Length: 314
Ligand code: UDP
Ligand code: MG
Image (tube, rainbow, N blue to C red; front, side, top):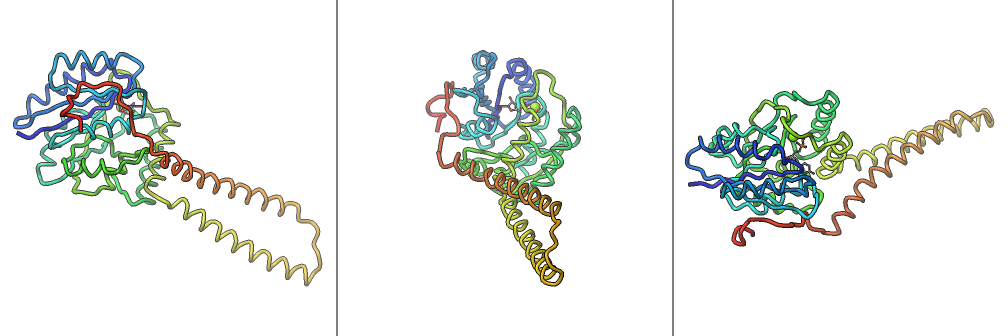
């Protein structure tokens, strides 16, 4: 019998967790020849998530949990789950039932067809605001165009992976994680299947628009240095234009004497170049800040408590 670990990052999900386990258990009951185990990662929740997890663990022997010492973010929670998983296959999914467990049979079939991974992407972004849909669309096309990792528009962190792939992912131990990119970066045969997005039934999204923007920036800087190249290209083009302008002005001055009025030109050039320099320094700063954080080599998460046995923990 093959084993499957279901990794579920949870941040303030006390309301939805009992429902999540109920619905998922119903799906699991219909799947033969596999044994399932949950690894819930309580990401420093401020509500009673941990208490709910403990109650669930006392009712179901296959419910395991890891609790963080504080909120480290979903990326860290996913890493902790993967690091502590031991099963043949690992499923990563959200707690809020936006990743419907009824997709399990199709996912398992997908991976048993000889793939290392079966991942999902949203067919339709129902239940999302127009502005979020737009941000998401821009992000995916930007990411796919300028970096080495390619993913379909609407790719989510809901997937099943083989042990081999999970071990590869764990080797990428950067602190500022962008799992969507990491999953693609490690390679392996991935089958993409479509699913209908569902609205969050209980609780609310943990992402603000600013949070999503920072996440997108993390994604782009983690897998591409194209913005740095763009600065260099921009510098080159501006220098070239400036050189041409200097030559033209020199000739003009030599032939026709000094033309004093030039206030508007000077002002425009100063402002324009000032803006470009600020932007370039900003982009450089984004990368340098990330280098700085990464060189500290801090742990990705700190565990508060767990009900995983010693032999479960690697
Ligand atoms: N989550 C987490 N830590 C956080 C924020 C979110 O573990 O700091 C979990 C959350 O509990 C959920 C999943 O990540 O299981 C996705 O979060 P959410 O539903 O808020 O994101 P959305 O579906 O809106 O992208
Ligand atoms: Mg959600």
